[in-house]
Amino acid sequence: MLGFLWALIIGGIIGWLAGMILGKDIPGGIIGNIIAGFIGAWVGSALLGDWGPVVADFAIIPALIGAIALVFIVSLVLKGMRKSTD
Image: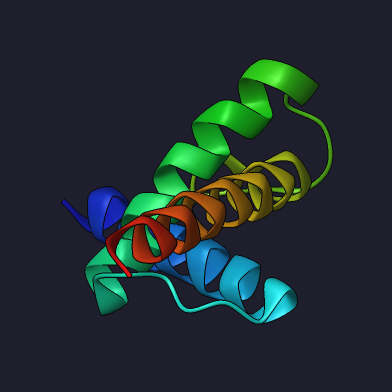
């Protein structure tokens, strides 16, 4: 149980850092940060492998790169959706 809680915290921090690096808000607040961290970790590990420091089963560098890419893509999609409704 403690491992799962630790993974949620690290996933949230990774998602938050990705949003801060890009200067974009992630929809959904804390839950959105956690989701972005988990999906970013999965994408980053699939594309880049598991190298660098590992915390709570997250390879930090690939997870952060994957989360940055995810936040960037989500922000582009949301921006496009806002323009189409105007």
